[in-house]
Picture 1 (cartoon, protein in one colour):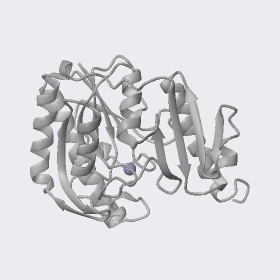
Picture 2 (spheres, rainbow, N blue to C red; picture 1 turned 30 degrees about the horizontal axis):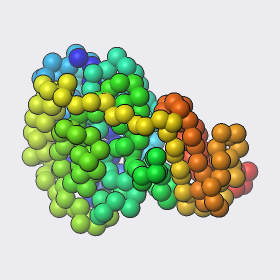
Picture 3 (cartoon, rainbow, N blue to C red; picture 1 turned 120 degrees about the horizontal axis):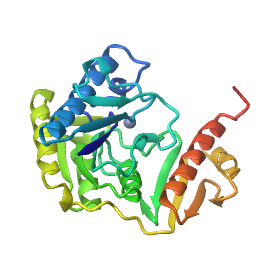
Length: 280
Ligand SMILES: [Zn+2]
């Protein structure tokens, strides 16, 4: 059995501050990395105790060099570093049996989710898939679904756990904190969440066949409302990306993975355009 873990950071046990998620910080970021690595290791141990023979972890936050490989559970492998065509799902293919989302956060504008945002918070105001606002949980579950692999476990705050449950019937979730503000949560300590995550990971793999891969209706329509009007013209350099209004573009494609790659490309361009692409 092969398990793929996409590990973000904001949803890790104990994390409640951007300082704990930013390499520009020192002390707090190092604490955040330990919290994240601890949650990932708990998921790896659970997977292995349930019979996983391969566990591939994709570091999926910011510069994607957050997880402390020197502390990574023996037996897992780690994809580390930036510039990934499939972003938070880099490394997944149809040979995997299950996907875990670890330390995930709620989508932009979703309740009081801790540090809620969608993919690039400074760039994206709202992302819609087939008309519905979506976050990374839905977008990435769609990638796994396009490869025929179910997402069976999510860890994060209660807000993103609810997001996952409404999207994927039967998914196991571990709410490691209850957020009552974008910058504050009531946290279960890591000493306790380790066991919760390990147990949930092992348990869900014993009934992995009960969860279907997410099937997104095709052709898929992605709409991105950017924070800045500057992003739209550059994003529309791709011939298949159409402007909708001064801040919004649309992508339509019969292939989910192709649509996602166009989406990711528009965000990269949209981000570069915000400061003027040649003004740096
Ligand atoms: Zn993140």
